[in-house]
Amino acid sequence: MSKLIGVLTAGGDTPGLNAALRGIGKAAINKYGMQVIGFLDGFRGLMENRSTRLDLDTLSGILTKGGTILGTSRDKPHRMPVGGKALDMTDVIYENYQKLHLETLICLGGGGTQKNALRLTEKGLNVITLPKTIDNDVALTDTTFGFDTALSIATEAIDRLHSTAHSHHRIIVVEVMGHKVGWLALGAGLCGGADVILIPEIPYDLNKVAEAIMQRSRGGKRFSIVAVAEGALSKEDVKESAANNKSKEDDTIDTALASLLTQGGGHTMRLANRLEELTGLESRLTILGHLQRGGAPSAADRLLATQLGTASVTLVEQKTYNVMVSVRDGRALPVPLKDVAGNRKYVPLDHPWIESARRLGTCLGDD
Ligand code: F6P
Image (cartoon, rainbow, N blue to C red):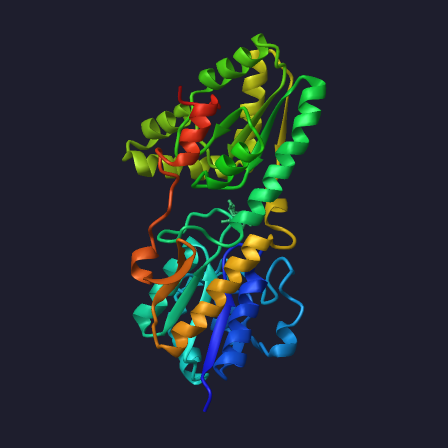
């Protein structure tokens, strides 16, 4: 009997998910004679046993499509909202997996999905994961699919904001996704030539940001572009939260961030307003939001998703389970899921992109 693979997409959608599903499905069917079913809406579909057969017809024409043909959700197996309560449904998931005689489950997701997948391996499921997220914050992989597309979208947005900022002599604060890490804001800020880049890894000093803008203004540049990650915090935000919580710095940053994020863009609006007050220059805020996750994947994301998707099926054939298929120096490489789950890939403070920004004279809010 041919092997049956189950696949699901979980967490926020990302360009390249369909390319990866196509890679998994075509490699499984064409190369290894396996069969594939896709669970709908992430782990919820696996728990409710809602799935669809992924045959060659279904997989045709999806390479270039954004989103995920399977649907997704942020539901977690161990805290699944059911009837108004959050219940541990891992046993139900285990039973469904057994009933269907799945050889393995392939989960396409970001940091949260890696943790959820690890929990399922602890129940006895054979799991393989692929790293996808526009945030690029999954540990032990050089990059994640979705990031390159989002980087291009955010870069184009910054390019376009330049001409209007320049014409009106304004500060434009552009909020880029990334609630815990600054890969996207830093990358797009560098590619788009932002004058200030603020990321969660470097708490910023508002006065230093204002001074950098004033200095440009004194030099004849009466406009500035500030690229800010949605999770970037000022030093005051961090301090305030520390005073309120009397907790360790890491917890403090998480708590401050959680409170800022519930304000839904409120803190970046406040940043734009404060910069206007401190510099006397008119300012505006642009929140790029979900635009960054929409639409067709870039060529690089199609390549990466196809490479990782097809490689994951070879791992099924070899019975290599409980791993994430990472990309290292261009090669697909299995890494133990237990080493990935719970470890976030922050921008290292000595990363070459940070060094380039500093050499350019871009203000990062700290000096
Ligand atoms: O994790 C990907 C991401 O796009 C983050 O950058 C962002 O903070 C979050 O998802 C938004 O989540 P949602 O689509 O659930 O609002």
